[in-house]
Image 1 (cartoon, one colour):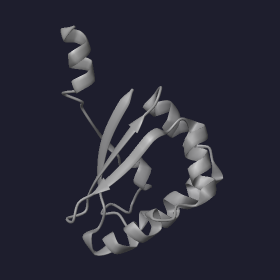
Image 2 (tube, one colour; image 1 turned 180 degrees about the vertical axis):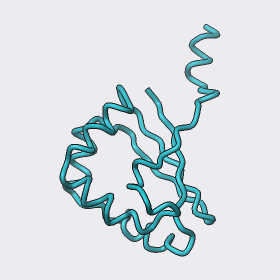
Image 3 (tube, one colour; image 1 turned 135 degrees about the vertical axis):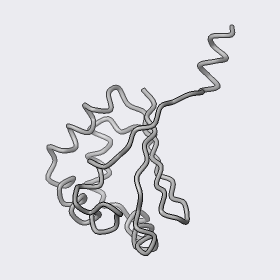
Length: 111
């Protein structure tokens, strides 16, 4: 399963967001991988648009597994002040986007 999602970082907080993601806590990295977050990337535009991409077996399941970890609770609390909607944990505000094209899938279908 390929999942793309979006969120919005407060534009004034972009430098801090970049700083924190340049050195994500090793414990957080290990928990993400153990929970099934594969080929996970985040992309940030200058206006605060944040786009994430992850490959996984089941997006709801990997989010639920992360929600059970203490490190994720700490990370979400630290990151919440950097987002436009700080009334919720950042990972609860992800807006999943529909995939409308994938080259490999279409090539395979075309034979």
